[in-house]
Amino acid sequence: MPSITLQKDVIGRLADSGYAFLSASEAAKVLHVDFAQLDALRGTWSHLPRDVYLRDGGAYRSRRHSCFVQTFSPNAALSTVPRRPHWQPTSYNALHGGLERWFDPIEQEVVTAPVWEKLVAGIGSLFERVRLAQGSSGHVDKWFIEAHQFRIDTTNGIGRPTPEGAHRDGVDFVAVILVGRENVRGGETHVFDATGPSGVRFTMQEPWSMLLMDDARVIHETTPIQPDPDHGARDTLVLTYRAHGFQAPE
Image 1 (cartoon, rainbow, N blue to C red):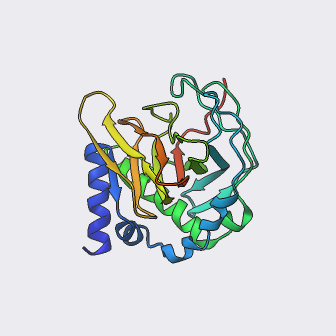
Image 2: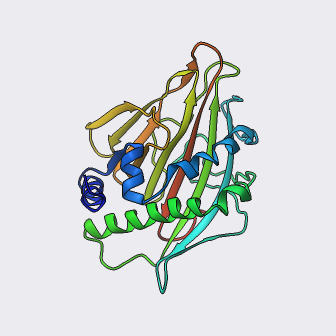
């Protein structure tokens, strides 16, 4: 399928159902990204600091977090903003909401790579087109973007990609990108209509495949992972896009 036709198809799926799953080859065509260049960054997931904020007592998650602003006029551009905490209200995250969580920033090797800007800004531009396809008036001036590198491991047994359970993130759009998984079973992704019973279940297996979601319309979760046969890990990149500033305490 030609890239323009495929892009229109993805925009249509997101506008109609609130989510779209893309294989790595589809994502490469839609975003015009060379995933071989992204592969060069995969090693940075191997030395993420431990997440010290887990309130379930677990020690299975490592992460880094950085924030960006994508502008659309007069020219499209992506810029890094000074280090800031990740914050969500309890209405969106009952487990970790209301807590300012300060994580080490994503390494410069990653955020200065040209392919990084192409990926993050490309997804942002796609989400802007979805917004217009849904009938929103006018363009957004900016996307306020939070990027999270995650590693969920099974060193101590079960690892939980979404310890907060099925949830929304309190943003406009979300991209969940599988970077890789090794020696694990489980990790089934669930995406359901936020106001009804309809939904889908699938397991992301292919590196650089991605799930794109309209956060107002769907809830999502990923089931726990277990060692298979020895301890392993599941690596993801999660990007959130919000039109009216970063989430912060009142």
